[in-house]
Structures are given as structure tokens and as C-alpha cells.
Length: 76
Image (cartoon, rainbow, N blue to C red):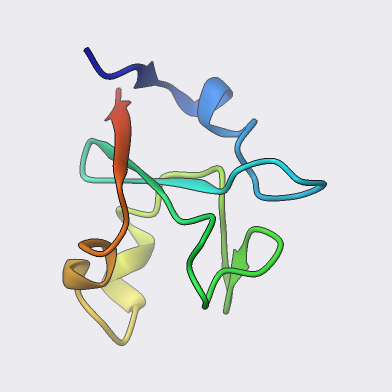
């Protein structure tokens, strides 16, 4: 069973100081740690450790950009 993250637990995965970089999107949590566009928990103006569902509306790409990343849990 996959773990369930909330705002508090997800914020611990901010990609800084060696921590993994996780982001939530539409109820799923993705591990973007190894993503070439994610450096130290940052991708352009987006930060790891948060729910990006609303921010994706402004992205130049759709949710297909997350398909390459593993789902590590659910977000509630």
C-alpha cells in the first residue's frame, strides 16, 4: 500500500540538502529527484515539496511531463 502524504509530510521532501524531491499533482505524489529539470528541488519557478495541481495550469506542458516519474504515494 502506497503512503499518503499531506501538506506537512510532503513539505519534508523539498529536494534540498540531499532530501528527495517529491511533488503532488491531482492526488498523486511523484518523485522528481532524478529529473534533469529539477535541481535542488527547483524547476523554473516551481518548488518540490508542494502540490503543483493549480500551478500546472500555467506550465508550458501538460501532465504528461510527470509520466516519466515514479508515483510514490497519494496526496490528501
